[in-house]
Structures are given as C-alpha cells and as structure tokens.
Image 1 (tube, rainbow, N blue to C red):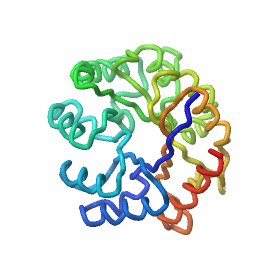
Image 2: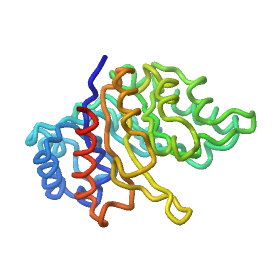
Image 3: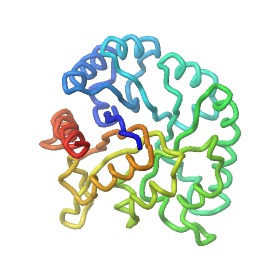
Length: 257
C-alpha cells in the first residue's frame, strides 16, 4: 500500500507564475508550506531550463503537466525535450476539445490522434494523461459515457488518467468507483471540492464542500496512486488563491494523518 505524495497544481496559482521572477516567488511560498511536488499548468512562457533552475532551487519535482492538444500533435519533439529538461515523464491534457465529444465517432477520432503520438511518448519513457471534467460523464450516441468509453477503448500503456474527484462527483458519479475503474492507470489524482450555492456550482477550499475527500484519499492509498495534487480553478477563499492553497494544503495533510 502506497502513501501518496501531496502537492499543488500550479493552475491554482497561475496568476503568480507568468514570468520567471513570479514563478520563483510562488515556489518559495509553496516551499515555506512544506510542498515538495507540483504540477505545471498555465504558467507563462518560461523556458524549460529556467523552470528547472528554479525548481532545483527549492528542491521541487514535477509529477505531471498540462499542455495544449495542438502541441501534443504538432510539436511533439519539442514537448518531449522540454519534459526531459524538467524531468517529468507524465504529459497531461486538461480536457478533450469540443469536436472530440458527443459521439462515438468523435471520440474514436480523438483516441486515434493520441495513439499517433503515444508510441513516441512511450519510446521516451513518457505517458499521455487525460484530465476529466463533467462532460465525459454524458452519454455518447452509442449509449456509453465518454469516460467509460475512454477507459475501455484506450491502451493502458499509452493512455493514462488524471481523475478529478470534484468533477466526477459533480457529474453524479462516485469518485472512488472511478478511481477503481482506472486502477493502474493513474499517476496523479486531483483533489478539488465544491458546494452548490443558489443553484450554482462554486469551488471551495478542500474539506469545505460536498466531496468525501477522506474516502478519496483512502482509495488513492489502497490503489497505490503515487500523487495527489490540490487544484482549484476559481472561487478562491476570500478571493485569495494563495490563502486557499494554504488552507487546502493543511487539510490534505490533516486527512493524510
């Protein structure tokens, strides 16, 4: 049984990571909280070698990234080289584009595109990792949900998952059930939380919402999922992403005990 490494998805702090100086300041802040592992997403145009210098300065590691589909398909070699520089073997996609949803044919076309670059990633010791939202839990024209179709019709050696427990819950599914469905195909799980206020979904700091994060943590542990990353898209505590990160980091460490 594995004890997951806890970390922070930098998408939460993206406004503070748009240049090298701010990236350094942000990692310094995270280091002061005790963070040792991050996910890189939506940071500014900071060269990979500069990212690595700053990461090394704070003895931080990158467990996964999020990159645009266009770069996966049309800039594969450079993307691979950048990940070699930052020593990250998991390349993530934040979600399928609109033209890859809704029908079996559209999803098959999306899978074929990923397969076209999956071999090259594998040759370089890397994997493609798909992050879900809630739309993947809607049914395709063949009656299956998109997420189930992806799980059943992709190569585990090429196509991995970054399950987001809040989006799974918001879609009306059980996060623990889907963590089990993805067994052996998850390096990083996203911990996110939300409430329904005045009929609208509002993200919140971990432990303040509707998701049973303790059950999710226990499942990650039982399934030997190596990493759990806190992510919050918007609706930060007191409109303060750094404060929300601190509170959520403390909550994750609390349930880990």
